[in-house]
Length: 445
Image (cartoon, rainbow, N blue to C red; front, side, top):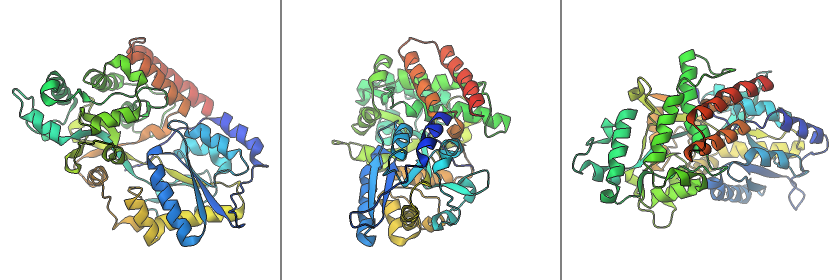
């Protein structure tokens, strides 16, 4: 199974802008005592505290300071562009797969001979250059789907005239829609505000729809064509994309007109407080759910349901599994700081202490042979592993690594927002998707 994901690149403009600064932006992350240090630019706000705990442990063990800076949601690429131009630039950062490598390749060090790269369970997952060398190392396999609260679902199954009597019966879009519609009509009886938590469409908060959900129609189209990328897409599954998106908007805790003002944290809070039975998100969401004040969702009641959208054979579908995280070391940093970053990554992914922290604190399902005996402890992480090992289902590959750019996704998010509020037709969304895809692919080639 191919497991890769992208944050999407800013394009050649960002690379050219930084190239001019490359000669004078050699990173200096020296500690106060004159030694080296590590500066990691983190992508996920929800993991910031865990990263800082890991950094503190490493500093205590080695004396090397690790600085953790976290970009705001949806702002990683612009933050990376700004930070790499500074004299104290990040020495360790994320690139977004093959597309991202093309943007940042002047800032990525050859990691082929690093210990942690050598321990990859599947070396083909790494981002490689034209020379075949490794410039980006994946470090977290993740999964996403529809998260549901089984306590609410069991309550629904007992209602008069319930469409189904178990989750096993929900294995296609038609059944999911029938169940959701029936639950929405019984929301007062079930004590919920809606079936699905709010669809967050505030700028920078729409990644679940313009990236994760948009992955599905593209995945199926590329699968039909037996290719991993395409210069153009026809959006042959565009109506399927619409159907599941409409369901999220209609059987919701809020009206569709309110969606453009909602954040991901709003959505996760609604689910955690039992106001919604379902929410689309990934295994990283467990910490967001469990740490909400007043959380009512028990660990044994939280599970994944695959995202169904009416595609033939989707009864055999699992969840979407891949990786968005490719570690890169700043090639413009001093050799001492480069080595410090590599040493930190080696410790994280090959040492006993590091791997334990990665598994228990960061909650990563890390794709290294050093993690074979380390299973995730959180309930959603456990289910990702179960889906990965289920040979009876196909898991949906993260193909949004080949989406043209971050701007493409951001603009798609705005079109989805306009559609949700009735200011655009779905045909307008699809016209943007297909035309912008083609034009950006041509410009990037």
